[in-house]
Length: 298
Image 1 (cartoon, rainbow, N blue to C red):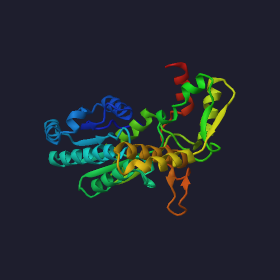
Image 2: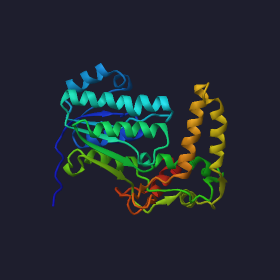
Image 3: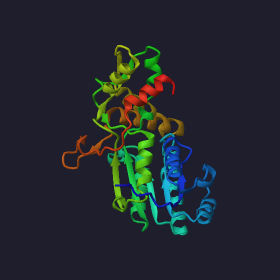
Image 4: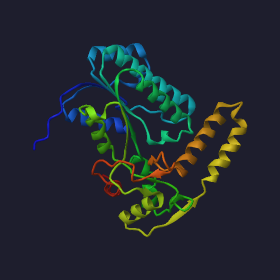
């Protein structure tokens, strides 16, 4: 059976300069969609954004924007306010579908950027526009920070015993295919969709073992206690009331502790535990192949 060719749409893509956004742009163009990709300056100018969307006659809006730091001010400005401007422009232009790239970690919100994302998700769901919210697990990029360490013969850093957290990482291109696939999927409308890459779920220590194996080296690990982030937060909080710098750094410590202790998997509402079985898998690109490309310098 021949797979149906997607109907070309006029799409406004926000965040095309980012890693995932760039992959989404490639996929949209490969499928023949007409894409408008405004720059950051346009995204922060509601009037210019509304004009660009109206002139392009956009039918679909895809938002891949996200705060770079996760700091409260940045999260409010990008994860919430910039997306609100996108939504308002989409409604004014008569767009019929808003696809939002969110994050799986908003299931257990403890950080400023998570609350900002959830606030916009709630607004989007009640706006009247057709919507799809996509909550991916870890990206390959977020699991690649220690490639240079291992290549240089240094130990792989783990938190605790390295088994505190697990995830099903997904590649940029697989995630982009899933996002673009939402355009012509009525069954994905009005849904919040968690998505991971090919399983099984992998722990931090397993990531390290995989990376050492691909590099042809004996595994070496160095354990770091997540408590260090708790202590750092407490110290920084002493100055948070009088200094924005201290408040921001305290939030960074909270972010670091969160990712050191929380899995990026679907949270089972019945048990309150993270579940690999409940975390959907999509795509074919593996973390092992990604590590091989990085180590080869491709």
